[in-house]
Image 1 (cartoon, rainbow, N blue to C red):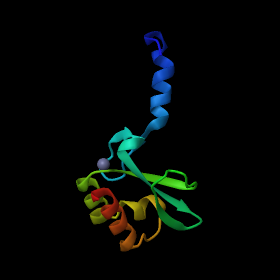
Image 2: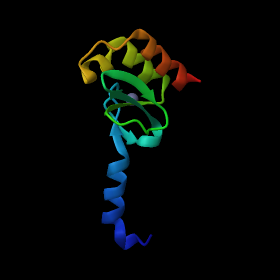
Image 3: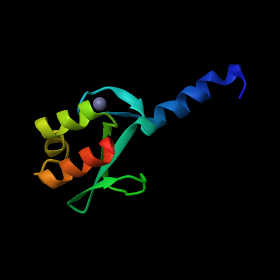
Image 4: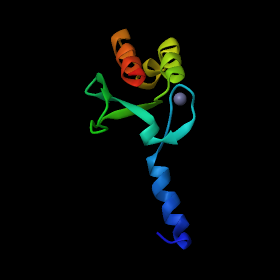
Length: 95
Ligand SMILES: [Zn+2]
């Protein structure tokens, strides 16, 4: 891609950017894990293929720990997210 097409390049990048619900920083999708709510069920969306409402968290020990401590997903999805899911996210990221 030529450098004169920066505008189009930027637009594409912004689509790929998501905000981490723990640290509130905007990062590229590849640096985040997606958690999806599909029909009132919250699951870890590793392949990024689930539909529904999504929340993102950094693939970092700090963020997944903060996420569980503050229960950020409960607020995002407006329901009680089970501890097991927070643990699954933590385990997946720290693997
Ligand atoms: Zn983060």
